[in-house]
Amino acid sequence: MEHYSRLPDTNNFLLAETEFFRRINEAGDCNMETAYTAFATQVIELCSGNVDTNRTIIALAYIEIELQHHPVRNLPEEKREIAAYISKALSFVRKMQKFLAAPQVPPLIPIRTSSDNTTENPSSPLQWTGNAIDLVELIYGINEMGCINNGNMPLKQLAPLLYKIFGIESKDCYRFYIDIKRRKNESRTYFLDRMQEKLNERMLRDEEMERLRK
Image (tube, rainbow, N blue to C red; front, side, top):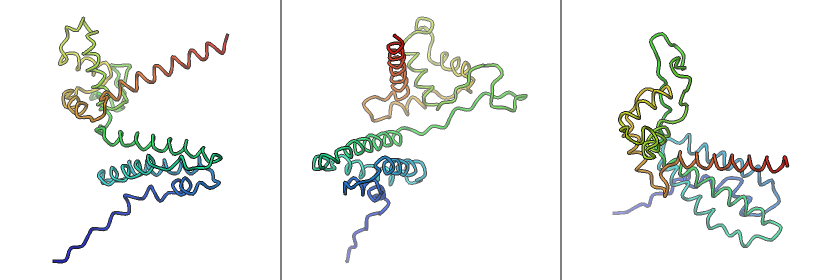
């Protein structure tokens, strides 16, 4: 019986055929910022518009290896700035890989009353506009810190109260918690990690502003 090998899907190598890759491989005179921006845009379109997640994952894995092992050390000294764009592209691809690995959860549904035809909840001035899984991560974090009622309030009582404060219909916290536990990265608390990073960045900005005012 004659066997035929399956041809590789050209979509898997689509990102390697971009203008950005042509320029970093040829190391010619060019506007690297424009080429990089076009490359990043194509990565975003691939991740957000491709219904076949497996092909997207394969394409990103291929391009990650190509960027990681690009012979940047062989570039002439005057072209070393290209190495910075290669590093940026690699970091961006890896961020998008994390995005795909995380469960994609739609935003929570605001509480609505029978007389309320808007998305605002008149009973609460607060409205959670993030993703459900982020709020659950925050709720579990607060619960583990034991900073509500000295830690004596069970999660099953705490979660509905916090949902109400944020004007959100009660959800199954544990289902989202399972999704958080299934994350494969070293740190599985994506939202709390971003919160910590953002707060530290703000303090650094404030300190810099205070230094400039002296």
